[in-house]
Length: 311
Image (cartoon, rainbow, N blue to C red; front, side, top):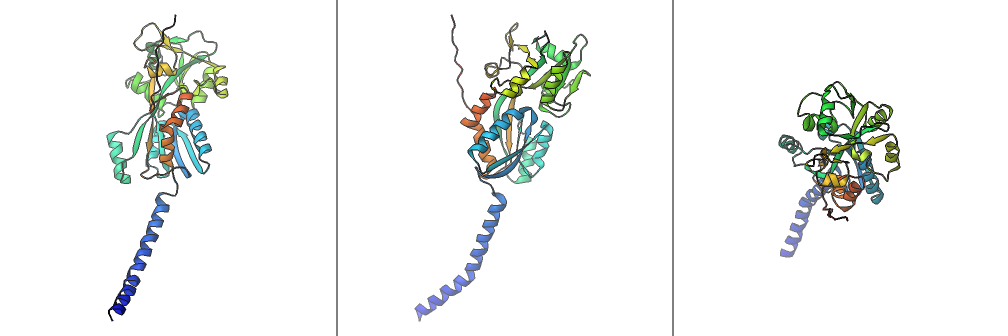
């Protein structure tokens, strides 16, 4: 009698709880598909990146996808302000820009997505000053750069930027160089960094400001073709008056070059998806070496600088 009773009780419990367990399993499966249809090495995501860094980001994505054939990263190159606005676009998983989040922006995103976004530095970049290949002026002080940007009389050059309102180069010029003062009427907008190079190559009365990743890699055939059309000017060294330096890695790492900015990632992902996989690639050895080869200074790995005495 007791044995039959317990068998009956087991059947009743199974009839009650089996549907519940199946429902929970189904819910869990649906939640996984909705939240993590991609993994750290597979799937498709969209990201937005500052147009100033197109050459090096293209290289990063090319290598990452070659190592992970099932992964697809679709990048949208835009002015920095538009990239930051894309943080409010659900389909954009990550943005790559020249600043991190403010406290207010971080709180807004945390409230919206119910988790704190991740962000951090990737590399340090220099803004290169380009002049026409026929120009005899290849040495400038920061006073010269500010004077031209303000449109002060006596400076003959037009200043070419990759836009006039919302790019990272414009923000650097207005915030770091002009300290909020207005730009001169001689500041001219181009549609992109490549358009800046083209304009300067065809006009001897113009200088251009672009990220060094567009012109710094002497092993890149496209950049070598750019350097046949323009020259990279030297800027007076920070803290060593009378010395003029190029926007190269050593001068970026030692803060000798006076126009340096930081490249940041901002990630909207709270699980081990493709955004986290690509971020880990960028911040560890392989990605950092790609930044190094693009003549940026890696922010996440300690590349040693050794002092030598030459006799």
